[in-house]
Image (cartoon, rainbow, N blue to C red):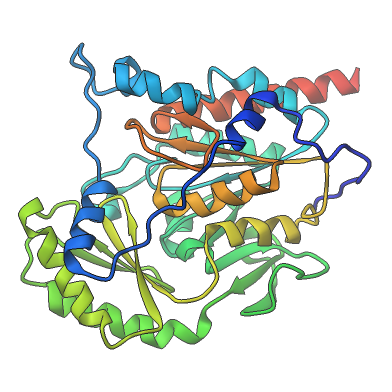
Length: 361
């Protein structure tokens, strides 16, 4: 459980970040209501990796990527700047899973994080409140991560296992249930879209049937949302994937379609997303109204933009985009891939340990 004092300054006194925040940030495009528009957005949300002139796959040496990092500086290069702002504050860590803690793979069920990454995340969670917020179901993410030291939010934040707070000021919908020592700690299970479960199951079955003739497509039931993966589908057939998904959703006006990295996400039409999940978890940790808290969110996907935007609008936290290709974001900093995420987390833990040692002397 977190605690805080409200005697700190509310000014976001990070000059570099202030300058970036004053830049106009255009809202991310929503899925158009026609298949050709969908196809265009499917391509935009599924960029090819940047290949550097020296033949490596890292974007670090690509001149376009280097120019992009002037707007979104490397969180590793800016590490001292980030922790200087976090000095004296309670840091809270939020992490996406796919593409952030594990590499993007052709088969979603094989997106297993390395033992080394698991140990790094565990060490982070031992030093500061840490949550994983993923589009996958909460149970699937836990099966991948297998760490009881964390909090988990699945289905883009619609299914949250969080700390037991004294109040729930962030939301007035969904179910909030105290759970007895689930996954090693007393937690609260919050589900923002329970009423949609039968509809999601029905749409999942329909999408499997509708897309079964498309080679490479995979439909995944993530409890409160359905993911239609087209990573292994020939690009010429992407329009068919979009059309089949559209045909199913025509009779479900309470469901909407959004984009991920080579995945279409069918989600309930409710005002809930990863940004709301961040707010809910901060509230549960009793840190929502603190001036001396520094939330850090690391993610790679379009769905993480809601969380980046919350931190940016609040002017008290940092979003870090994981990407090897240039793209607009509400994040302030960037990392290339999960290996850089691991390096950043290692350095963060070492810094926290050093701060603790300094205070004890």
